[in-house]
Structure formats: C-alpha cells, structure tokens
Image (cartoon, rainbow, N blue to C red):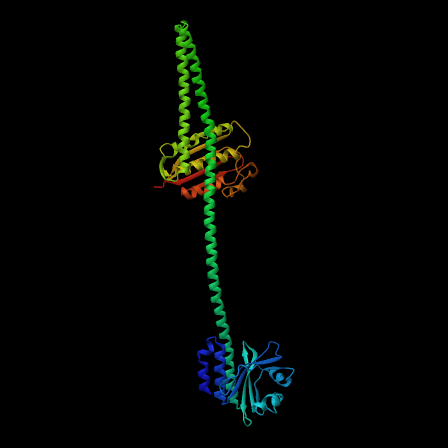
Length: 451
C-alpha cells in the first residue's frame, strides 16, 4: 500500500488539472491497495441532503452511465453517519447502523458484504466520500487500510485544487486574449479618432487661415482705395488744368503767369498721384507676398522685422478704422529660416484678436504694438496691446479650442488655439501669455531658425 500511495502522490494526473483522469487513478489505486473490485466517488450537494455518484468502477470498468442519487429522506441513518464527517467502517454492512438501510436495495443485489466510506475534503470542508465495497464474506477493515484509504481520499482534494487552478489559468489566458483583442480594437479606434482629429485640426487651421486672409483682404481693399482715390483726384485735377491751358492757347490768351501756375499746379498733382500709386503698388506687393506665403508651406529665409512690416501693412487701415494706433518696434537684420506663411497667419490672428477683444471702447490712446528681438538662439516677436487684459481664470483656457468670451459676437474661439498649434508645431517654438485686468495683454512668440 505504501508503494501505491507513493506512486499516486507523485503522479502528474493528480496535479495537471484533469479531474476525470485523477478520479480514475484514485479509484484504481484504492482498489489495488484494498484488493477490492468496486469503488466509487460520491459527492454531496451543498445542502448535504443528497449524495450522487460521480464515478464508479467495477472490476476495472467505469459505470459512468449509471446515475445514482441517494437522499437523506431515503437513508436517514446513513446521512446521520455522514454528518459526523468520519470514516464509516462497516465490516458487516447488512447490519451496520449506518449501512443497513442499503441491504435489500443495494448490497444484496450486488453481493456486497462490507463497506468502507472515507471522507473527501477540499479546503477543510467535507464534499463527499470514496465508497470502498467488498464482495464475499464479511471483511474486518484493518487500521492501516483505513489510513491508506483516507490518504488516497486526501489526494482528491488536491486534484480539485489543481483543476480549479487550471480553469483559473485558462480563464486568465482567455481574459488576456480578449484583453489583447480589446486593446487592439481600442487602439485602432483611438488611431482612427486621432487621424480624424488631425484632419479636423488641419481643416480648422485652413479655416483660420482663410479668416486671416479675409482680414487681409478687407484691410488692403480699404487701404488701396484711399491712395487710388487720391491719385485719381490728382490726375483729374491735372486734366482740368490741361483743358484750361489748351483753351487759353486756342484763344491766344495764354500768359506767362498762367503758364507758370499750370506747370507748378500740374507738377504737384502728378507728384501726389505718383506717391499715391506707389503706396497702392507697395500695398499690393505686400498683400501678394503675404497671401502667397499663407498658401505656401515652404521654409524660406527672411528678415523677420521687414517681413512683419509687410504683413501688418495691408491690415493697418483696418486697425486705424477701429481708432487704434499701430506702432512697430523692429530690431533690424533678424535673418532666419522659417515658414513665412505661418508667421503671417500668427501675426494676423493675434492682431485680429486684439482688435476684437482688447478695446471694447474706442479711445485715442488704444494701441497695438509689434516688437521683434533676438534672445540667444531664439527669434522673438511680440504682439502687445494696452487694452482691458484677460481675466486670470480665463488665461488657462485661451489656447483651448472653441474657448471664447465673445461667443454671441461671432467669435469661433479657434484663433488662439490655431496660433498655439502653429507656434508649437510648425515653428517648433513657444508662446507666452502675459496679461492682467486693465494692464493690457502680451503674446510673446519664441522660435528657432529651422536650418
């Protein structure tokens, strides 16, 4: 029996999680050790009011097709003995107090004379029995046989733990597989969402770019009309003077003083027309350069100060129309390589933002200032106003998409968000906000040369 017990305790079938194989090994081993031909594993229901056969072998054959259920109501004495959770050693099973109830219905038909029932335990709780059945003359169960049977029964609890562990591991594998699939699916969804956000961001940037171009167009239209109107008036005046001169020549009434007046008057008019047309021509050149830069997405070399002067020139009329002074403080020779269109869009957006938000009331002292400088390896330009400033609680949100303090006034809340993305993304730079109520606002942009 000791060798059998050692063999079964070392068998992989006990610990591999296959409870069916472990159960068969246990019953085969107990039959060999006790020299019996019939044994079964019986499990109690949770209420301990019934017990059913899970595996029964007889002469080496499994009788799994037989479903046997015993109830407390049918066999009260047997269940009372089970309640003690001790081994039932019925040497004379037909007359033993616990097993006599089985005499006619079970023992006699199968020629069973003696029974040895040992408890099955798992995690300290009795869950059933191994029923060892002896045929032939009555058998007195020796103490070492009881110990052997109990030791074999204890291995069943170990086999149950192994099965639960295997099932748990399988569940973990399944969960991990499902988790991996879920993570992959979520990652795919996130990538799709990210791509959609990038596309949306790109569209928003394009929208803000067109808004900036719209502001440029509005400014240049007004600014160009003014010098053109002045030039046209001057040319018209010169034509009228020429008509009078021609009439005097025809009538032979032209005098020296009239000719001198005509020459002086015409020279002044033509000079004024020339200045006006040159101004209109410069505005158009600046406008063409700025608009083409905003459409382009190329890195170019430029003088930051000269370029910013070109950018603000077309919108200066719009600024003056709002009774705002525009002042430039530009450090010369700030040569860098960057995206001109991005610089133009940022500047236009920040100036437009100042016009919309900084000055709720017209005042002769209202001012927007554009400043350039260089700090170490960084090029710096600043859009500053002396307006109402930004509330402290709003300063953390001004760069967030769709945040605006003038939702009902037509503001989309995308201007500063676009500026932030362009500075941190395209320019590889930083933007700093300095503001306080009634102390004005400063947007400071620092960026490296993109060599």
